Length: 487
Image (cartoon, rainbow, N blue to C red; front, side, top):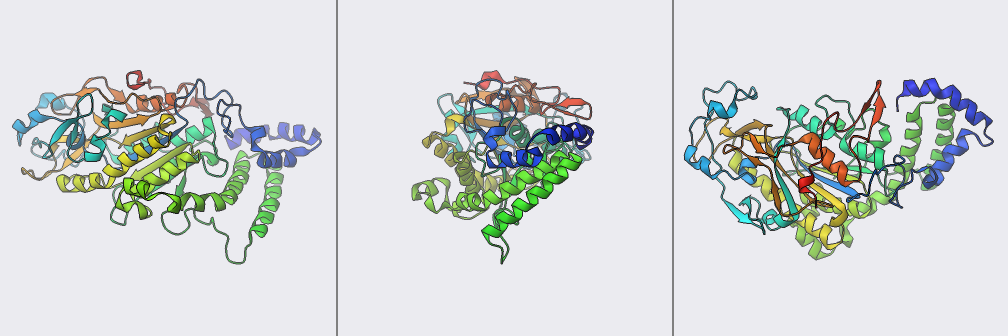
């Protein structure tokens, strides 16, 4: 909420609660002791919080797992098969294809834009013969579970505005992230864990790649209680979650009770809604002292499950470990889990680097879908895979038969979706022979976000928040649901 607007209303609130027999302190305390009393009514009996009347219609999905490939994986080398390009090796990209479209400063100074065909072999898989690169042997086995969208497009051409755009609906920082909107609208299904959790994956023991800023999982102008909680792979999963030396659980509980009284007194005086958010977050942290260690302890997983995810699943922080953790979060009712993995920004040495990256993500992606399916979770869990934009058909830097780099390309790239309400075994949209322009069924990132919300039972035009004099939403003033990919 807006603190200035809230402060203007505080006198009215103070009068109301001063006339009530119990006062604001008891009301706030009751909301902590029994949050169900203050939760919006929902078709989901386990839900806590959220907005009354949301979902707007029966949802197909209860939760979302978003596997985000930060840095932009090359659609040309993984999904968008262009065999005609083999005859175009080292030939100039026709002006009629580019048609004056914007390019980055990293290649704008090149004397030429030579065509770089993919070095990787493609084969058809699944009942409908979807083309999949040899880089993804595990993913190829499950194409009948996926809706592969080849025509995702965006206006942003550089990483930070592009990833900010797809995460928040705006290229400019300051808007709520997708997970924050879901927490705000739909609430949580587990009061002992955050509604929105973020997992960062290491590559070779480090993160590398483009920097990811906390605003990508932030709450923007929404209450801070809706921001994503980032779990760490070393030490305490959440900073300061453990009690310091000399602090017993009883002492911690007593301290929080006293702190809550002080915070409620302050709220009664100034009416800042962030004070209530602070109270809720302290209580959540207290409950997470038990729930998070149980979540991250995978000793109860069977060997068959561990084998499904691959060798790295036992190494905390790896993409495999985070995919398993995402499934455990789904089981526990976490509304939105975002798994980031970086180092897809392959301007040079792409054939070697993309082989490494695909080797890291291919089996865990397959394992996550199969694991969810085996446990009956896939039918109401929406899984999304992809990055912030795609890669150019022309080479950046030196070109040989075996090595090349690719620049950023926002005009068309590939994502896939699976699970709740998604029609499996389809490839949607078509690009030109150069994977440069959409020629059939474009899907803007606002359309993608509208479709995600639709599967959660949310009309993207109606999930709004008034800020600075107007109603904001995740899809801004755009977006349409891509009904053709829905079951």
